[in-house]
Image (cartoon, rainbow over all chains, first blue to last red; front, side, top):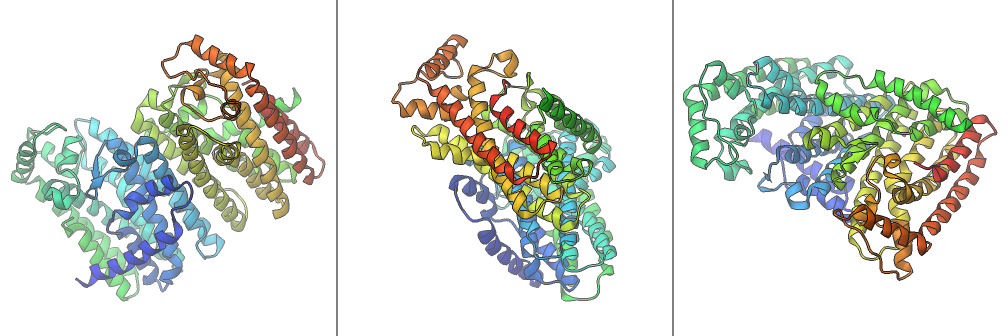
Length: 320
Length: 320
């Protein structure tokens, strides 16, 4: 698929830039721990989106590369701390950072990625006014992510959650980093405020679709491909759109716990399929992506714009 | 004492600004957890230093107030995560954030302070070029603190540590935030690069003295005043200058563990006093402060300059 090749091409540029911008220096252990998850892979969708947003408004992709790295580091920082909070032991097919390096190291590795992300984006070669604006957006986004992660934990404790509450939580926890990637990329690329704001809105909507797809994949993907334990969200009591829909239908769910067998998890997933909650969530995801894509009309025609549209479709149809 | 009144006056301004810049908004629990340690007190030395540095070069103290808040939030963020890493249960006389709110909440509370600090400083009313410069310094400083905390953990595991290794670690873990406070305050206040750099060097040196004094206070202060368990560093195997000196003298130390009685801790402290290691460390601290203060000569005479000099003395003579 052409689009995925283009994402990979940009991902490779990002990987090379990470090697330069986040080298293993003294104290080596800290930087090894910080690089461990970053180097374990990931699709680099967010940095690629940032680069495409810059390109779509005529920006220089090489100039925005550090900003793309910055976004990827923020993403990995949130994953490292998230895994601690959720006590997850496997990520991208490997032991999570806190399992491999211990809790103190994982906290510091995450914090290092956080500060390096700000260091790196501050040094983007752009007018100080634009740099200041992008830092303003990025720091606000990091606050939003904390709020979203907090809301996610709170919702897990509630017995009943509305779709509105879920969407609001996901917009902060997940979508905002996509929206910010597109906005920062376009601003560094020279976009007007109007275009940058519209891209923000577009990817904020598409990002919710991405998270819904993520929730679905957590249930239906074979573990070897998922790179972590299947049905994790179920066991953690996460209120995904799928669960919310099932609860709305008044269905009594056999929710598995951490000690549940694979069979019990399979049964729970089958139940959610049978009552149509997984289909319901997927329809919602597709609907959101259509809404988001229509906002991309604000961009002049270009191959970058086409790639952003195809990327949006991919974000809700991907199989891992 | 006049100087302490002046610090308190500025501390009060900082507290008011924190109320405005970090309000308890939705999700309330997150912001309550984030404010918990911030509101528990603290001497506000770093923000006061930032404000005095601005005043000493003719800057407007009200304009730099958000930057002062930002520094205080970064400081509290590092304390919250530090307490998790060190498994400390008491701070400022209260249960630590992770004890009171749980581990996930403490991680998120820290991260929220981190991102709010960047949000707040980005919005300081100053030319974008200066804002960019200050953000560059602050983000690098946060990386340095991570490195310093890592080195601190590493040194605790080593059987032998040199004074040079200790100083290098402390410069990153502790001093750098004082140095940055002075530098950012002066830059926002309109200082030349030369003055800002010299203030950085001055407070970097004085900050090492501060940490040595902190290490000493951990041993000699009554618990009620210390606000946490006495001899914590000893039990955690921290390589303070006091311990390094004792080891250099070839003394076989009776190092207490977490399960040690208060009597055993008292004996260990007495031993360090008897062999002169506590005096040795204090002499070093006083020496460093003199070195740092001499650099403050770069400033024109003013009451703010006098206060910075008196503050430096206080940092190594304070009793809590």
